[in-house]
Amino acid sequence: PLFPKKNYECLTSCEFLKYILSVKQGDCPAPEKASGFAAACVESCEADSECSGVKKCCSNGCGHTCQVPKNLYKGVPLKPRKELKFIELQSGDLEVKWSSKFNISIEPVIYVVQRRWNQGIHPSEDDATNWQTVAQTTDERVQLSDIRASRWYQFRVAAVNVHGTRGFTAPSKHFRSSKDPSAPPAPSNIRIANISANNDGSVNVMITWDLPEEPDIPVHHYKVFWSWTYSKYVIPAKKKRRKITDGPQNYVVLEGLQPNSNYNVELQAVTRWGQIRLKSAKVSLHFSTTQDTRNNNEQTHAGKPQKGLVDPYPTFQRRKTTRFLKIGAPFYQDNQLQVKVYWKRTDINMNQFQVHWLLESCAHNDTKGLGKVTELTYENYMILKDLSFACKYKVTVLPAKSKGRFKAESIFFVTPPCSAFKERNHKHINCPAEGVPVLPKVLAKPENLSASFIVQEGNITGHFSWKISKAVLQQPMTGFQVTWAEVTTESRQNSLPNSIISQSQILPADHYVLTVPNLRPSMLYRLEVQVLTTGGEGPATIKSFRTPALPPFSPH
Image (cartoon, rainbow, N blue to C red; front, side, top):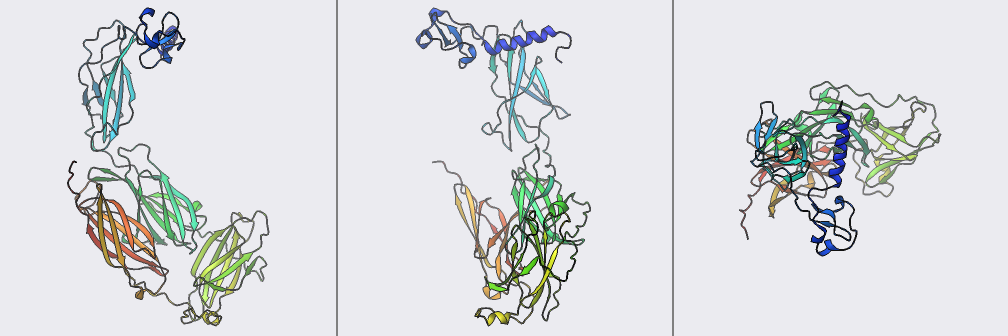
């Protein structure tokens, strides 16, 4: 409590606060001095607080109007005269000092200290925050402990007593701490937000995390790396996929992941301080692309061991017959073999189903265990697509969130040979040798990588293009993975030489051009393009381009 023993001081202070909020400083002029609207015989106000600026609610003899007071600064202390001084202490605190030698006031003088700041390499009043009160003191100095590196601060001081104030001093010169800014904290609470299945059987996973509350420098971007893992083996770093997200964004969507596979994601925050990049520690997340991923994911810091993941599917109890599942006749549509599987809802609570199908074996080929796919549906049927000819499949359906009340039901079916469809007016089907062919290695490689740049209003936009020979395509092409990177060679704090900050984008199969805005002038960029097919990704074609320099600015 401010007044532990003198309650009357508390009451007096409260009354004084009420008074200064309702009565402005200065004296009302004599009623006969009023002129213009101020002399109108109207009741336009009842209290000073209803008047704008320094005007007071004053009588004009026949009413009350807002008028400019006289003796506005009578008994009011002078503003501090000298320039504010800044002393940076070894503790990291900042001491701000000022001088008020000519202030002669019978009443105590309170100094109100305000500050504002902007982030960046250069001071800027336009980009500064609003003024905030940081101290009220009777001393001619104040010590502040919450000074952050990388911020440009300005201060102003007002002297106040019971009669009022003359306002704040002009904003001080800018001050910035001599301390180097710290690297951003590691992202926290990385987790899976959503999983969705695509029509081609692949999976999209949304990863999210918590943004830092107030780092020394705002996060410029997040680097996201992800790779497929098998058992204890992790894909080498050069095989990792990369993505960049903006600093204010706290999520990323990983597209086109394989179903029923284990993945490892690494996340790192990056800030920019001039030409230096400051990087946080990496945080990793190990997860599986099955529908119960949210229960199986775990957060770890780089270097800590990660637990394995359990198979979410219960053991299939084979029955002699199954009335729950039915298989429709196979049909050929959209250049792929498809089968409709449907089932009965035996309980009104069954409103979501996991459908899991597995290629058991194929004629003339030992392919047991290949083609494992899982999807989630709200319907009581599902069309299984992109099946192989002359193969045996096993389909398992389990009501989602059944908590063990319902058993998984399974059924087997065999697809007909390709020749059977060719005889049914599907003359365009190109039948290979019966059975499942071994997919050849993807040989398709983009060619003739080229770049053009457009400079407009100080912005550089790059147009990157390539070609591909369809003759070498042995599997259907699904798109292109394009990665572009700014290559820098200077040695930087917390960064290795020749370090690459890259961004990736997946383009449809009919897109042979990538447009990238806001490139930096006179900078070396590396472009990497890969063909994506149903059989995997082809070798990368890599080429480097240098952006043009911006023309010198010429005023009109």
